[in-house]
Image 1 (cartoon, rainbow, N blue to C red):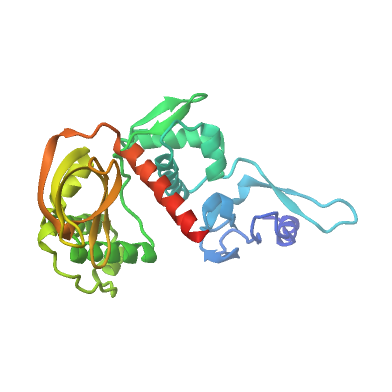
Image 2: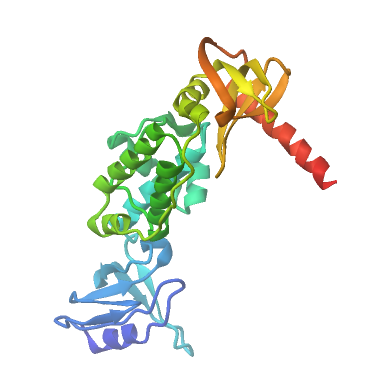
Length: 321
């Protein structure tokens, strides 16, 4: 490298969002530029958060052309000979981000909207969609129409932050202690499956979590039917129950269960009651008998749930007034 070129490169200031650039001669082993040091002769380290996601990338000197300053100015900049390549780690993280965005949309979303949300070019979005398809993601759609991800696809390996790991452990332990036995076993099994695909350092955080859930109150007699109630909600089936109110009066009801709430001292079924022709809340520990009917209720559960939420919202507003 000529002395003039070395002086030119040594005078380079920060270039936009790109970190400081320093020159070195062939054979030099230390390159100190940006937040990290690297060892690669005749290389400039470029640091750009938007391009490399907080990781430095190494580019050969021949990728740049020095632009000499105008007379009277000491400012020197660099121009790229070729587009800056995106590192593989950046792309892997971007694919995960793209999957998360897809999961938020139930209807087709345009490539332009995806590109805008992720801060990348439209061409990059199309390449990433093809990459996800190659790994088994069922993505329907085409350019100009929109894309939608069919449910059920998970891109391994799973990556979580320390807070996310603790949330998973705490939630699973709470479910194991405060719900029925089948649901508690399912929570423990799910945590085991997650641990199987985590990197060793994250798996250690999962196994060694210091968050503890205290034991819950023992299930009452009626709460032994919680698995059947959950199944009826899932399959949108009517329930015939014998129910005792707070005064001990017993009635037979046909209900359309839409949700199951878990409180510290009670499990409460949210349901449409055919006897009262309105939504009612039933404590599971007051159910004396239960039968799951073969026929489903006439309205979709999602519609009933929305109607109940609107009614509860109206009650809350009245209380505040």
